[in-house]
Image 1 (cartoon, rainbow, N blue to C red):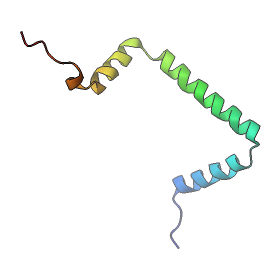
Image 2 (image 1 turned 90 degrees about the horizontal axis):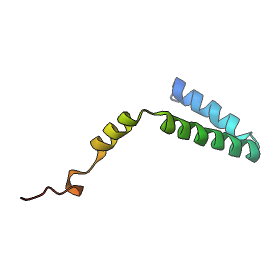
Image 3 (image 1 turned 30 degrees about the horizontal axis):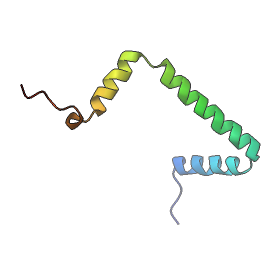
Length: 67
């Protein structure tokens, strides 16, 4: 039998805890994580957002002027 890595052990522990939470608490946790993600996006500096968008932009989506 292969021993579990630390990451696997942590994942198993979290899964064990999650399944024992009531559905109301699970919903609350998901809502709090969503709020945290939204706050991180809102708090991110504007120029950082624009740089990341430029890196992910498809150059074919912006045709060049042939003249």
